[in-house]
Image (cartoon, rainbow, N blue to C red):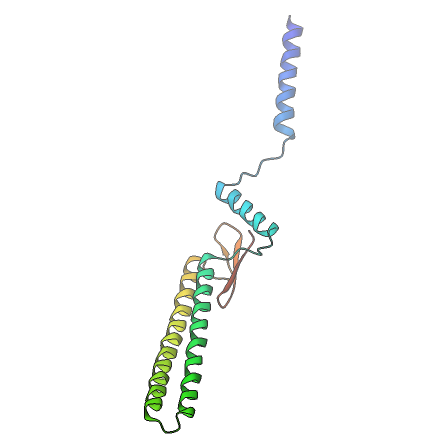
Length: 156
């Protein structure tokens, strides 16, 4: 009977030692780290490239929209010039071209102002939320690599 208890005790101690001493410590990941990892893996396998900070993506979209509007207003300036050259002294065409040119220049001033404001505000928001682009985000090992509006997150 004592031998049986001794054998069971040795067996239990051996099993616990085998379980607890041979396993490597598990690296627990938070749920957000697991979700981020899965999203990044899916994006990489789909060929979508590296993840981009949402603030930088919004700033890039606004920059593209303002660039398209800038091209539109430059086209209006060219159109107003064309109207001016083809007016041949007709006062109504000259007035129409002057009005178009005035509106196009005002539009360009507004677009350039909006572009400047967007650039300053987006960089301020990006630096306030992500921090210094050269420093990793606190405690995560994630680093934002920013060049103008193009910011990518490294270390995900």
